Length: 394
Image 1 (cartoon, helix red, strand yellow):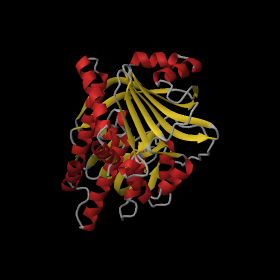
Image 2: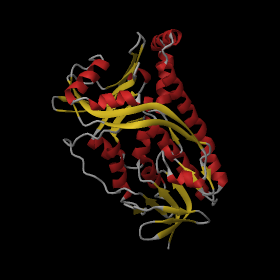
Image 3: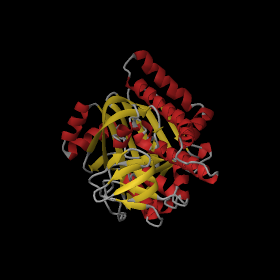
Image 4: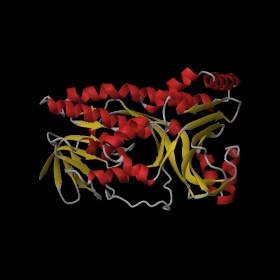
């Protein structure tokens, strides 16, 4: 039976990033996943993937340190310099500009598949042992933990759960979590627009829910945006039932034709929106990171960035423990990780929840408040700069 210091369960963006972050240590590391861990080939004319992330400056710096950022930007990363948000039920609006705040960009829109692919390319150059395509992953908790795979068992001194919002490992560990149904589904796709997106991330708050147009790289004279439309389940059903022409008309109308006509749309997908937070981030040498620890409304595109901040802090604490000759899997080390991350994650979660509730409210007083607040903030450069710095993680 192979024995590892660290077994990471889940080969998504967070899990692979953590494996890479620790790959230069002397730790014996394994990465297990039910899906393939092979890198894909992306060409400039490959169809856009429906799921994208708005990567902050802090996330970009992490990927630079991991050696994956150059691959992402050489494939299909779209930097954006502006963000424009408005209330579709009123007159409030706010515009953010990177240069006015002293930054080159506000972030980069990158397909999740492109991010993962670039990380995997780097991972294959390390000593991390990968166990992909495991139809069966079972755990026997103890000291050490045992992980049963399709054809073998492996042992782990520390298990890291990066296996997503429905984390089996979190449930098995007995770590309690609170969950709230956002009562909305996200409809995602890529659309072609008549006009260029102006290197801008757009978001309008509608009575039906927020609609985001996120800039994607153009192809010749054709311009694209990735869209995320948050709708109640019946509304999502209706939107998904439309033919392509009717869907393009509906989304163009909802977006107030800000980029001219919506000319075409890729296949549409949906997923339910839930808010979840683990009440502790570790127990008995099992530690949670990314969506396994917390999921938030995709309102500001901060979900993956929070997970990547988990990676930075957890890897920092583990490396510091190793350098001191300490037990990297000890509860005192994992407590430090929990203290450093839980407050920030909760703050972002509650902020997004409050913002969503404010814009979903139909009360005339709250409508006046949100429109006045947007206008006031838009005329306060210092306040906007502070918001930008917080959002960028700098």
